[in-house]
Amino acid sequence: MVRPIFESAVAGLNQASGRFERSAAQVTRLAGAHSAAESAATVNISAEARGHAPTQDNESNATLEGAIVDTRIAKYQFIANLRVLQTGEEMERDLVKSLKR
Image (cartoon, rainbow, N blue to C red; front, top):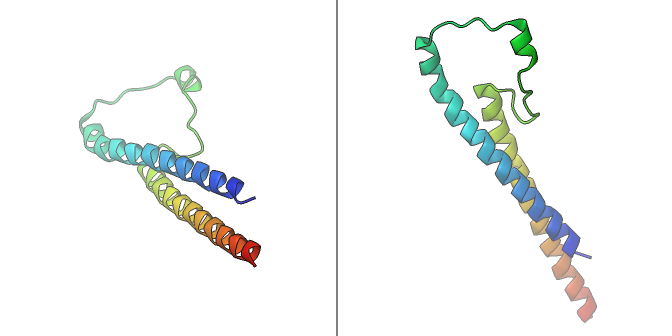
């Protein structure tokens, strides 16, 4: 009965951890990109070339601000899943107590 709760929480923790890692890597990449972009040459990209650009996933907006927000979301996902683990442990403890009676 309690096992699916633990499995769900662990899966959520893994997902939050992965999201945080991707977002943190993007923050690092984008934070360093601004100084390089300032000294870069200007390039014109045709509308046809823009049409073939890969789409970004929902986790980030390909901006530094979006990546920072994603790290914050991952933090709260992680906290929420830790609370699920805690609640599952409490439920298990109460279930064991009630079975002993």
